[in-house]
Length: 529
Ligand code: GLC
Image 1: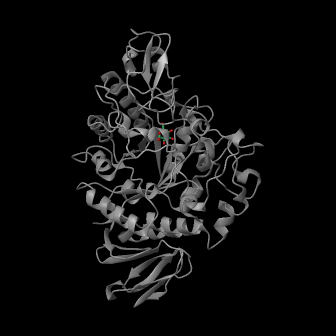
Image 2: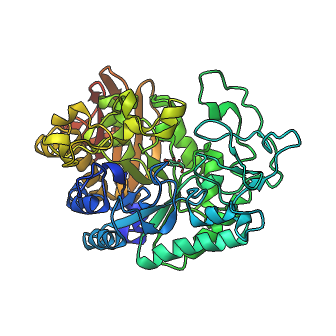
Image 3: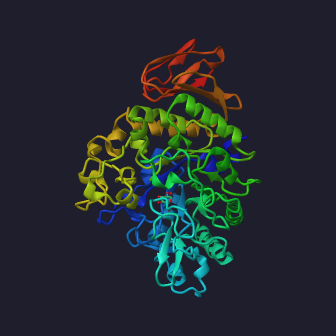
């Protein structure tokens, strides 16, 4: 097998752009499509294959674009359809792919479908959303909660029924059991695929279908006061229902009409439930996002076990993937510290399967504490679980606002560390996080063992994680130190070779035989003899 036997989304690296915070071209303090286009050369330089842009569609922005009011138009804040066409063309001209974000579980309450649906009980679109009577005592139909706090049901005074919203009140859930909804929403995908978009990341894919009987969710015995209020219940009946797989398979059938387009599913589930989204016959998502590097405790033994479990659980023919960060979770450099974030980068880019990285992580950007008056994210305001800290503007250079905007004030504050942590400065620093990412990406690209090779765990103890990637005799040995103490590894003779890359970027070519010394927080990739 050669690289040509694989598809771009298998051999490639995906980079997530959160459009509000990437680059502001029109000076309003919010990023836009023209801004993203102006930075494509940077992404190309870094060596990426695909850019996934979080929602840029028409939206009242209650959830910053994850509340869509028109799936077929661009929000003026981000630009125009012409800007999107231009971004698509410019991405393709550089040999890269463009992935958009599809939000099928819910619309904005301003979407014309919902405006109609709530207008009267006999409106033809009434059943496009999830409407239920109150219980005899006037209380909501069941105990389901909203992910951003509070209950999942909103009373509509005008038509005297509740509607269900898994997220904000302004994000009513579509009724995917209705065939008209299915047709309309599949048509949305067709519209963009016909335009030449290379794929979609599908928002909360496992939420689309709810229990037909709307049974109460069970209490979560592990929940304690102070935990996220949504976790008080186990979402047994409101998400991950068996029938959701038919819907995802329908999406896949459409994708199969086109060449090499990719469906990525945003799914936070335990591994055995997650891999079901590949489909029983590999007929669902190409890549159900694997968030274990985000969710698991950063410990060599925990991560080693998670990798093994995931590799073992993958159905035959399924292609793995790994995600290190996104716009919903604390940044990796904050979660585990900047030094370990470099080890995590090496892990992400040397594991088997498509890596997805989040903008700014390649610089070592950290979460930014948002002053009380500047909090934007609704769950930040209501339940103190805001996602603003990981969404602050990308840091490009040392100019005001890190080169993100010419406006006096960006929509979220720029991190104070921007004079040091930015693209311009890090490009010139041979030991920067950015240059580590660039070297890792180059190595992954040039070594077939890393791009498409097998994964074989090598037993290790304590803070050390070791494994081999191999492809037709070419072998790379990875040794990662998850701890803050230097470590010595005694090598089997079959693991002698020379260092291809260290997270410190200074040991290239060093011969390793007998013993391998790892510094504190260091990872190395060794090309075996
Ligand atoms: C997904 C998105 C998140 C959004 C939510 C509701 O989890 O990643 O940002 O708020 O769905 O659409």
